[in-house]
Length: 367
Image (cartoon, rainbow, N blue to C red; front, side):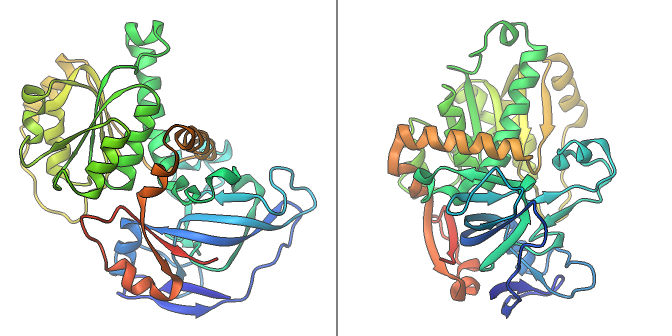
């Protein structure tokens, strides 16, 4: 079968031939890959950035945002059947720490986890995949066109769930108001796929959502946001440190930008008792000057929380499936407009280098 592989630490990709995988134990599921998303992690890997091949191999099959159809199941499998649409999760636990043993490899304490298509395990940019039933999540047939969004959506679900759980524990108002988020001002920075999916999840929960970016208001991302009744904020006109003054304080901030300076400046927009979730990972190692004492004073005196969130557990994927279905019912085909570019696997090298302001999510079609 065909697959897209890299040699970690070197730039470029190539199409390789790999043996088609087969089920070897009762709890395994074999799927035919239909499409795989391309994200910043893939681009970093292709440019020679962070990636690790499986033990004893030089090459790594990349790709972690997958969508597939089940073609065979082991004798003990009950979660899916042949013909179902499904996705596999990404991270595999270390098998040593308590979180991993509890099925929460996203919270691994040892750092010895592996990730398909990223770290120590081949990924999903290939024709067929076999993996354990415990890592699969069924996707309703109605979501066939948008199911490839499940992995980035799972990251969003985890970050927002953690923020709302924190507020329910520490905020008296949130503790007695199950729908605390309804009508709350929420700011999402960076309107790539993760940022727009965060806007979608917050709108589904009734929040008043503002999306911050540096593109023209007539371009694809702000236009998509407007359809779900979000408000676009052009950071070139309203800098992050002026959001509070010009728009108002935000009860929840979600950063999906990956720009360190912006991530710190966004603290100025956070309301007293607010919570701030960072999902964007800055690249490079550029020095950054911040007012450390002022920052700490603000966090303490305003009862604010700042948390980082990475990866996601199987339960977050399931939450993503539920929310994606609700979004499908509410906004219909508009959700599919997040996927702006589709390529064949032979066009991967072209697609990974193509990224315009009109691009939101790009996918490789394997089916």
